[in-house]
Each structure stands twice: as C-alpha cells, then as structure tokens.
Image 1 (cartoon, rainbow, N blue to C red):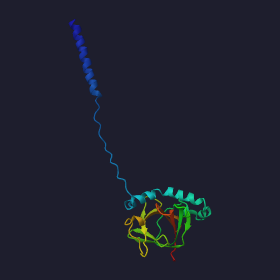
Image 2 (tube, rainbow, N blue to C red):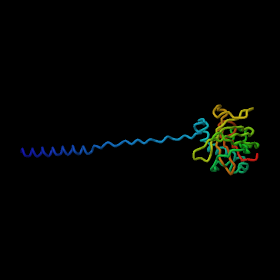
Image 3 (cartoon, helix red, strand yellow):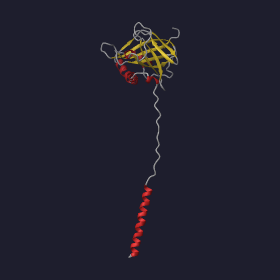
Image 4 (tube, rainbow, N blue to C red):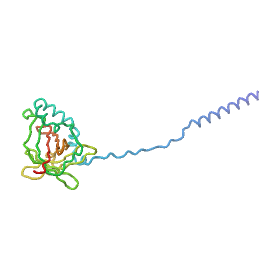
Length: 222
C-alpha cells in the first residue's frame, strides 16, 4: 500500500512539474515596439498665403466649370464652340508658366447668379503684363472691368499656376497686397491651352458671374 501511495505521489509530482513547464512555454517573450514616424506633409507655398475661402474656391473649381458651362450651353452653344480649347477645362498643357512680357487679353464671363445678367459676355480686348519679381512671376490686367494684379505661385506636380491678387482700385495704378482687403481679393488658376496661349480662370463666390476666364495671347510687338 505504501508502495502504491508512493507511486501515486511520484506520478502527481511529475504531472505538476509538467504543468509548470507547459506554463513557462506559453508565456510569450516581450515583442519589440516599432515606432514609425510619419513624414510631415509638405504644404504648398500658395496655401500658406491664400485665405481659407480662396483655397476652397480653387479646390472646387472643377464643379464651378461644370455648372457654368451647363448654363452657357443652353443658349450660347455656338459661341462656346467657337472658343475651342480656351473654354475646355480639360485642356491643360505642360509648362504653364507664361513668359514675361506683354499679352493681348480679353475676359469671358460665363454663368450667371442673377436673372438680369446674361450667362455669357465677352469684354473688349486689352493688355495684360507678366513680370518677374525676384524669382516669382507677377501678373497685371488692364482689361476694362477686370483690372487686377498679383503674383503667380507654383503648384507641385501640376499643369497650372495659382494666381493670388487683388482689384486695382479706381484712380490708382497698382493693386494692394493680396489679403489686405478680402473684398478686393482674387484667386485663380493659370493654364496653357496652346503655344503662347494661356488662360486665367477666376471663380467668383460673389458677384454676377460664376467664372471669369481671361485669355492671354503673347503680343511681343505690342
């Protein structure tokens, strides 16, 4: 009997020891913690200058194009077709920066916010000027009703430039700095549509028209 009790005790001890060993095996070793640092998102320079409202306006430009063109097609289909690629928002050629110099310009206003205002009108031809200030291009328009001035900003990996400027007040020659008076501010995109042929698209959040498109054609002999 004592031998039997001794055998039972030995077997029990071995089972207990085996259980302890199993428990030790089940304890997972601590895993190293890997911390991945995300690279900071590079904010384009123009977004650091533009107001939040103007940045949103430019981000929503594709929808503004679609809405304005849908309205124009109902009554001015032939006039729209005659403008060709100038008023095709999908036309954006590489190298969008216009060379410094004089350009012959006109303004096309499309889309209307008021029943009394036609959704299509074209200004008389005038002159625009692209200059250089430091390493940045400047732009000024002398078109009657659209006298504006400001600077052009590069867009990373884009086929356009951002224009940020302001209206030239009456009886003055130059525009005030962008952001100094939000009522006078303008924001738009410059794109190349053909050789020496550009457009500046200016979406409007107020006023009679949804979009103003300024056509720029190089005029070196002007």
